[in-house]
Amino acid sequence: SAVISQKPSRDICQRGTSLTIQCQVDSQVTMMFWYRQQPGQSLTLIATANQGSEATYESGFVIDKFPISRPNLTFSTLTVSNMSPEDSSIYLCSVGMWERGNEQFFGPGTRLTVL
Amino acid sequence: GENVEQHPSTLSVQEGDSAVIKCTYSDSASNYFPWYKQELGKRPQLIIDIRSNVGEKKDQRIAVTLNKTAKHFSLHITETQPEDSAVYFCAASRGLDKQGGKLIFGQGTELSVKP
Image (tube, rainbow over all chains, first blue to last red; front, side, top):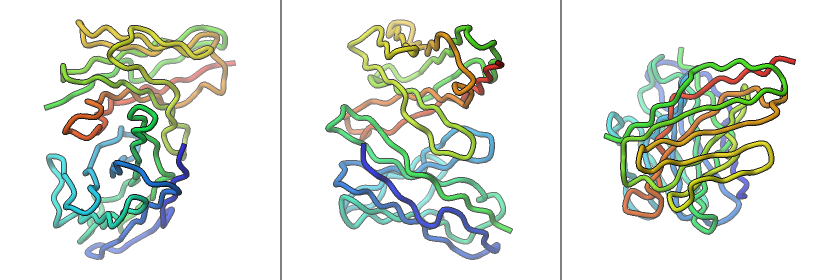
């Protein structure tokens, strides 16, 4: 499977600030996704990061709050804007491996705490 | 919208016993059903998956069954071991269609295997 890295692995941020999370893959992948996992909860899809075009957001998530970039087939960023304590969560990127029949693999996650 | 229901939320078994986790999905167009294992503080790991053209798939002590008519799929773990203790998530996806393979996750099952 692809090697996926995320930066930062964790961060503690102040209310009202923004944090950009990076996701890097060691090979070109068709699809990249961003998920949120709140403590003790399941994974919720934020958006699909589309290469060369605007991301596709799920219900309840908007571009102004979670701007996403995907400049090429190996890299994406998620920004959490104007943070509040409710944004404290683990943010995970995943990549879709169509060569392996739509299997998805996850990055290690970014643990965000907002004070 | 799409929904995946997972039961039970917690499951405790004795080492060597079998464990069964069940999921139902609402989107009849779903055609790909992966299962992930997430250990504490780690990323979800894909352990097995099944596609809609198959009714059952087995990989050593793990098996998954799919009933498309009932929109129901299950994970079976035999001869459980303490290292099987983790949170297990089921998911459903439309695969390679316009939805782009996004995963809808169940709520998770915390499996505890007692030695």
